[in-house]
Length: 235
Image 1: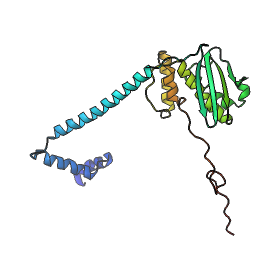
Image 2 (image 1 turned 90 degrees about the vertical axis):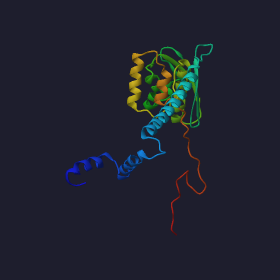
Image 3 (image 1 turned 45 degrees about the vertical axis):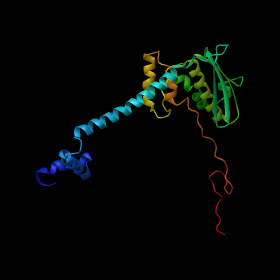
Image 4 (image 1 turned 120 degrees about the horizontal axis):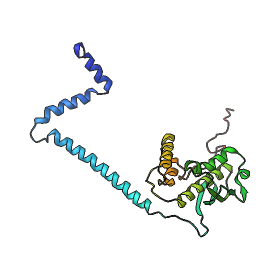
């Protein structure tokens, strides 16, 4: 646009409105009085009703998942322990937790002796850190198979599942791993303010209740490894 309407044209261009959109609006305005076509207000009402119907279905599904989650009960054995199984790569861990003073036994050894690397120990304690229950549980676990990294992941998953079995509650049907660190921190603050909020929700937000399915890719014939090729020789 040129002349006095140039500023208006710049505003339209900045808003992302294309000429095809403008032509469609003009066409709707021209056909608004044609016989046999419903008025524009009726079309708008139908579109709004369709959106509300979709929202209602989502709300019904959410309530259904809430009812299923509320049916959970605390799973504790005769010794007052909660159990959880964890798997990662080729490692399988069996974990029992009960209220205590923070003892952590892995294959009949102290966990700091079994895992001398500090990062591995921090990884094991993250389920307790995110639920603000560090030092309040006695953990006894056995793990076999795989390497150090796989065993750490298996034990962490087993601890998270054991915590969930000890403290069941409301847990909406959400996908783990799609929440930012800020949201997790915000929810921890909510848990501190409202102690009735369940720790299973926090664990699910943090992604600690999701089994990591990644494993080593198999070697392929004609390849040095799964993807690596041999050095190419021209002659």
